[in-house]
Image (cartoon, rainbow, N blue to C red; front, top):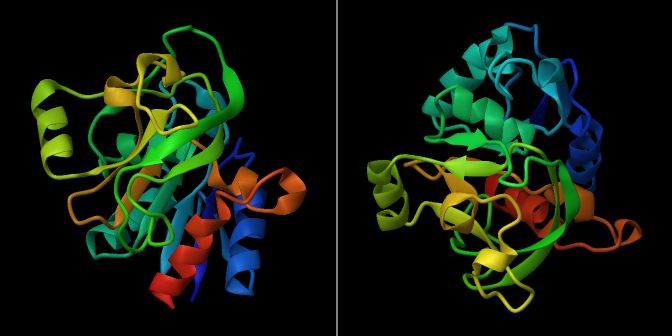
Length: 229
C-alpha cells in the first residue's frame, strides 16, 4: 500500500499522521507539498489537521484552492480514498468533496480534549476495524468543528447512513451534553456518497500509540492498510 499526506503552510498534524501511517504500513507515506500540481501514484490521500494558511478567511477555504487540491479532487472522484482530519475535514468540505460546513464552536472557544465517539458506520476502508455501536476515545482540537448542513442535506446524510461518527458519552449515549461544539445531530464525521471520502473533526493519529495514552485511533490506520493493500 502507498499513501500520500498533503502538507500546507500551517499544517501541524502532518507528521503525526505520517508516523501513524508508517507504523501501520511498515513504510513512510509520501509527504506532498500543497504547491505541487501532481500526486504520486497512491492508494490513500490524507489531508491532515492544522491551521492551513493560518485559517484566514474561512478555515480551509484558501487551502481548498491550492494546486495539489485539484489533483486530490480528481483522484477522489476516480475512487481514491481520501481522509480529511480536523482542518483536513474543513479543506475537503470547502473543496466540495463533502457537503455542509464547519462553523465556530457554540462556545466560541478553542476546545482541546479527549471525547468519546459512537461508531455509526463500520465499512471498509476507514472504519473496517471498528464495530457499529462501538465507543472509542479520540482527541479533538478545534475552534470550528460545529458541523452544519441544510435540512435536505441532513436528511440525505442520515437516510443514506453517511454519518460515520457521533459525539457520545463514554457509554455510547448520543446526548446534547456529549456534544463539544454544537454540531448538528452530534456529527463528528461523515462519508461521501460512494463511501470513499471521510471527513472527521477528531484526531485518530493522536491516540494511535500506547505512549500517547491510548490506541483507539490506531484501528483506523490498521483498517485502511488491511482494506487497501
